[in-house]
Amino acid sequence: MHIIYNVQIDGFTIYTQYMMHNRYIFDPYPLSVTMQRLAENLKARRLEKRISTKSLAEMSGVPASSIQRFELKHAISLESYVKLAKALGYYEEIFQLLSEPKYDTMEELLEINKNKTRKRGV
Image 1 (tube, rainbow, N blue to C red):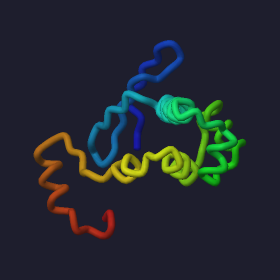
Image 2: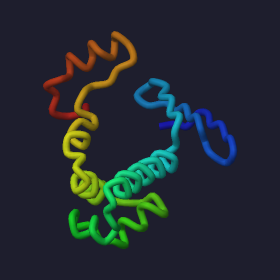
Image 3: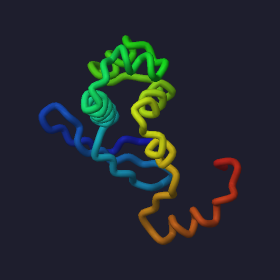
Image 4: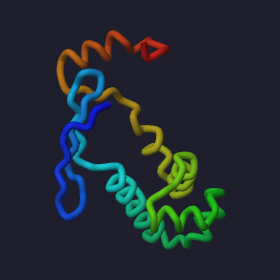
């Protein structure tokens, strides 16, 4: 993967173009912004349900310190994130993530359909 181009506005990279599999991929959100948004969303859902960090920890099996670190520093393991989302009632949303192929061109759609039964990448 080669990073080709970054635009910095107010200290955030808002647009990244990189090459993967001989295609240009446009990524408007760097990982840090994505993780921040996930943390903010989780905290908002927790607070809407009037659930304390301690209660969510008991419901999910994720230590309260990990929940606090995620909400403040936006760092968490995938396993812990899934446990938290499920504890808040987001079962279907977790299962829907990446459940459908995504394509930009007709060629990509044809390639996806051709490769639906593949077991390995190469």
